[in-house]
Image (tube, rainbow, N blue to C red; front, side, top):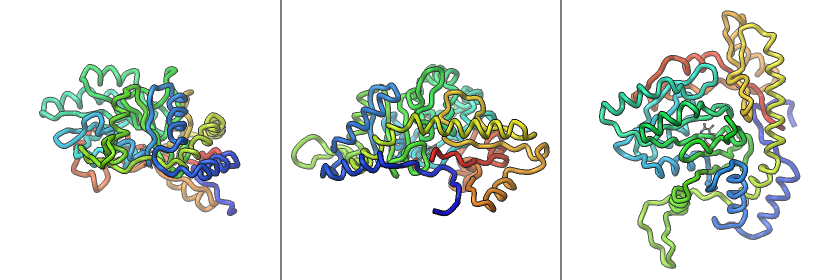
Length: 356
Ligand SMILES: *Cc1c(COP(=O)(O)O)cnc(C)c1O
């Protein structure tokens, strides 16, 4: 082992090993293996929601969720510009076009104040909005108390990209349960991992059934191979579902660890002028990552410089995501921006936050 401190490394031990070995020894490697169904039920129970579908990645889950709410050619989807590219890419897979929206400077989550005007302008331009996507940044839930009524009034479903927020809550409700459909990721650096994997959750049984169908090549339930839709090979592996069940047993303890790390950073930087923690003071956050926002004229140093200093000490950190409307691939897409995401990109750094 080197002495490197990583940003968000996987946290696995003997429990995971035993669950994976049990899945391997069961001889079940098909997409109807028993670990998958059990994992789906356990995640649904943890989130407090009716239905769940395990899939091969968070990105696959986003793709299916968007298809299920009707995203496709001749529609647009409102996407927070401050996110990982997968959120916007999933929109493109459906043939819909993303329209980017800026974030609140405090939390990095979708700036709800911009939404009514954006929806009005899209309506006036004759655009059909298939969905509004939210991203629960670093594990902090977006402001659903203000966002959901706006979307409900407009008759637009919310697709919640909760890839970072499994186990988080806001106003007593779980991340993933606010939208018409919610999505989790179990990729290698998330709060819990199956190496590759994701899950959709919803109260809508028909929506989850539709996604399940599409995720397994849209094969009709007849003996011969009959297909009425173009399907996908998006199911989760039974072995990885076993890994996920073990991680889920430890989720609460892993969140407690990440919260304790956040608490230490908060105490440390409270004494450092010109710094604040992104999404500070959110009691429901799972604290997946702790990101520091640096006001360099006040601090006398920049987020970039801190990153360089940490790297020199074998400590991994990384900048906030470059906003989607700044990405070459999305440069020609419309965006309702205030400059908040640009400023966070220029001034933030994510610090080692892993529970291991
Ligand atoms: C990790 C992540 C994804 C993608 O999940 P994968 O499992 O890696 O496909 C999507 N959206 C956000 C916000 C993420 O952080």
